[in-house]
Amino acid sequence: MLEFLKVEIKDIDEYMKVKINAFSDDVQTYGFGPTDYDDMNKLKEAITKFPIYKMVLDGKIVGGMSCFDHGNNEFWLGGIYIDKDHQNMGIGAKAIKFLEKEFPQAKVWGLDTPYKSYRNHHFYEKMGYVKVRETEPIKDKGGFYLYVYEKKME
Image (cartoon, rainbow, N blue to C red; front, top):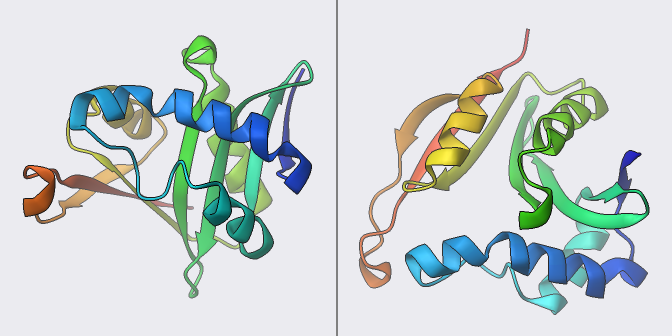
């Protein structure tokens, strides 16, 4: 059974292992992962400020996600990540649907994802997101940039 539950301090070690595993391909491709993705102290702080969820399958954490309310009914998907052993099982689609149901006041959802993350592009587009722009390349990160996506809710 798949559940989406708020992360608690007691979950941090297991949650962090899953998060690091999920972003290992990004680290291999780009030489780094998302900002502070592996910082335990930042995660502890974020848990007290933002909705951060763990994806629990049969009692085991297999992924996580966070979101932010930007005001004016605009929300930002801060991250969604699934352990490599549990990808391509429909968990990501269920996670997106969970957030949309959990925050019905959201009229627009936004997110960003790396420019070479082709599977992410396909997934988000399948979930109704549309690429709206690209960020400027970051010089000290080898020209790395992000695609920014939006989904307008009905």
